[in-house]
Image (cartoon, rainbow, N blue to C red):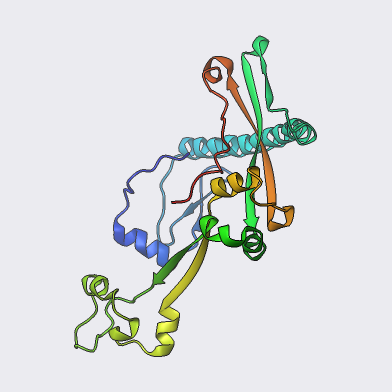
Length: 241
């Protein structure tokens, strides 16, 4: 992860660069075959030694980039051996090698997309105990808009007016439809759904949801991993609040 540092450049220059997106110009140097990329209208006075140092650093970075890409490809091919084995043997979760002081874990993460209509039909009267809804409303209000009272809209005024209709701010009906957006987000209580299924209260067919799994490989030193306890409950089976 790259370090985040405060920019030494003036804000006006940062904003100008963000807006203009100027392409750098090429400036010749004392080193044959090496040109500098500099801001248009400016020059850099660098010695041949400094230019060679920059060029050497760039070459090393590019070479390491290729090495990392190659290493990642090799890592992926070896990881596939483990993940393919785990797919064929669902009870396999990895291994420990004391000779290498190595602990390898192989595990899937699951994404479940529900067919809510089918799920409601399966649940019947119990649907309200499993399926909930969240209503998400997004308001995009351009501050500075002149309100009917003759005052420019401020954030303070907007917050106060959120309990009123968007039309009350002076927007047309067409603009209000664009500004005000609603999204219904279903919530599934997977813990409750599992309890109903395992207790035999409902018969949960496979077609009520589409499940996709991605297998991962994680490596640790044994002395660091040995304190890790196996998870008894699937973390995805959490109660929605």
